[in-house]
Image (cartoon, rainbow, N blue to C red; front, top):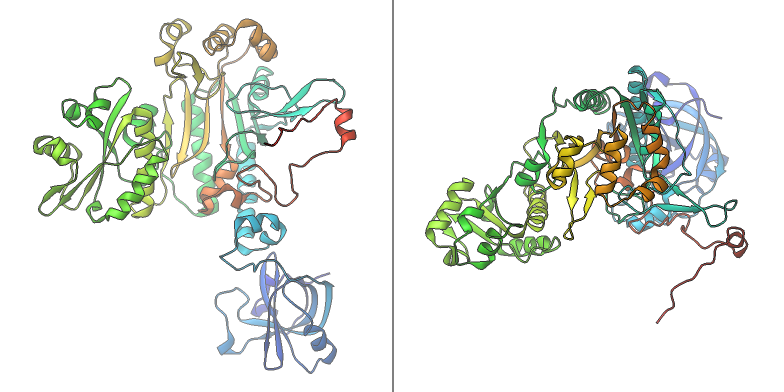
Length: 584
């Protein structure tokens, strides 16, 4: 239907007859001459319709934005004063001699170039939203990312192998999406939270290097960088240790950023232990672009009369930490109140501070701490005139989350970034998270290998470390993996520590436990969140911006109005009865 793409025309095409197809991006009527900006996947071309072409001009008068047209005309040079250097076709235009309306458009519910359109409207009319240039760029970038990944994996002898979507429900950290079976009455499939068990089985099958770009499903609380269905690059290898796996994947990420973003990441990514990440930054995914660190001040605060500090300082599970912000003394009282409300989201009961002014330190809490303790805090944090010190004092978990999140917010608000890109590996995660009742939960998943023997694990499970590793870029966890358990006794031990007895283990993981007894090789892997990687590369703040048809934060699709009810006949086939809660 077309001879050229709109965005590919230039002065080399002068005097050529061309046929273009696309959407009307904008229509302008200038003193009897009509201009149409025609848009296709390659860009824009300006089309001119003169009144001398009577029929064509009459038709052009009826055309509006987002009409789909086929236009035939001649490429001519623009007048010098009309050249548009902002677009690649800005030196030429097409003088139309024939226009065919392929399809008309109703007035669209929002302007594509408007910055005021709500996300709710954008998602409801996603097919219009995706016409916007920035959305087109993001999805093209996504396509290039997956192409690069496939090419890299192929060059490194990995096989692309598909795994099932309809599988067995297994505990992997979030609720499963369940699919009722019509042929097995009362039975349910589960959509996979990841291909974890299948990729381990592939290692036991002798494939040694597997990958897959795959959909995963998790019914969990959502936020800006989460979706109920998401895509990941899934990787598993045999006979490779964690250093070999992370080194290989680091090469892929480094090449990906260079090839697609002309971004030079470090030749070797730095590494930090989980313990130090929490101690210094409050989170296990630290944004290393922000040069702020938390400092423990427990010892200084143990004997102060200020119970807000001395209480946590003397508690086994408490922490008092300080966060120095260079130049922060200029932060206003109102801003401090806003930050106090912010940390309250994480359970903090307040946000104490000390400002270091020209005439010395000032704060409502100095009278409770005394000059000597105040000076010790200033010395320990290295605070200078013009700085501010924020404090967190509570249970360690609350302090870490509150001050860690405040650190990131301050970094954004005050533009404290000292570099543009900061990848880092986080290693030496705890094997388990111990609940208040003494039970254990897996930090990653139940198939992660510990860094100790079975005997040592049983002796002190709460202090044992795992062979897990996460890749964090600019404060976003873009990938995570581990060396897996490859011996049956160790796997049974871990399951028992997680409260999964032999009978339950056999019911849920019998096929895996059996496979471990038939010559299972040492193996490990990693998964990269494709959505988060593209989000990071495109410098947007939500993965919904890099997914063609995402769900809302309530896991709904505004475009198709899903989830929705189904017919009684469908439910009857599945032997399912829906009981809705009664309304008060």
